[in-house]
Picture 1 (cartoon, rainbow, N blue to C red):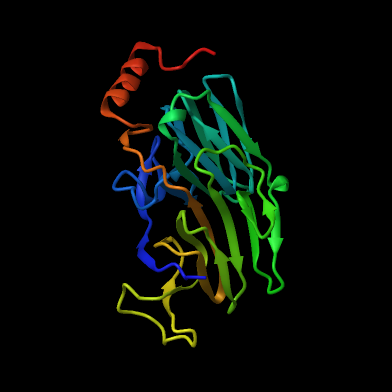
Picture 2: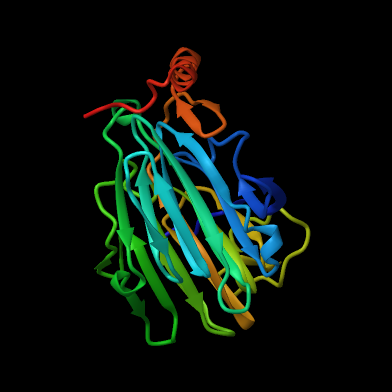
Length: 300
């Protein structure tokens, strides 16, 4: 087994999106090759309703999949195909925009005004850019949770981990989407296939990730196995991993909770403007022409 070196550590940045929603963007709208097949990760976490209630009014998507994972509050959604519903705490929606969809997402806080969730964008390969749109709405109760002897728990949203397979299936990039909680003071090894790009996003507690060679001057003492641990990795931190087949995390005194996401890179050209992602600028311009002309939504 080889520990994945840490390629980069960064903090998610405050951003305004939609009709004025205050959120934090972990990555996106820049050089995304390191995250391929993923394009963007937003952390929409707020306790002030006026900072999120305006929501994300009607907007288009084509060529991607959007994955919405709600931890607190609800997100009401509607689309141009007549679909609608609400995502509650623990629920997931995996939307394949494919050939095109218009939709809106309107967040609403819980009983004390808290709203928290994530939205991840995954790219579609050229062969599926114009596929028929579809939804996979998953209730919290249908997402399996596996717990190890040391108390480490993992919610398996998509992919297979520790012999358990998540409910989302048929996704082009064959991603693995995990919500990992490691108890205070515990060290945990988590396997990640070498062929995948992988990142972790810390959103509760703090801890450190093992690294064979530290890219930062600040590090803890050398561990007995010869690896170093990068410390002070906490809330809102994004950890991008290099190649290898396992991730090692050491939880801090409050434990640590993070998303661990990996997927097979598509290695295709990306032409991206706003909510539409294609392979060429010609395809991108065609999509916006169709949006203007009213032919964006394809009849099946």
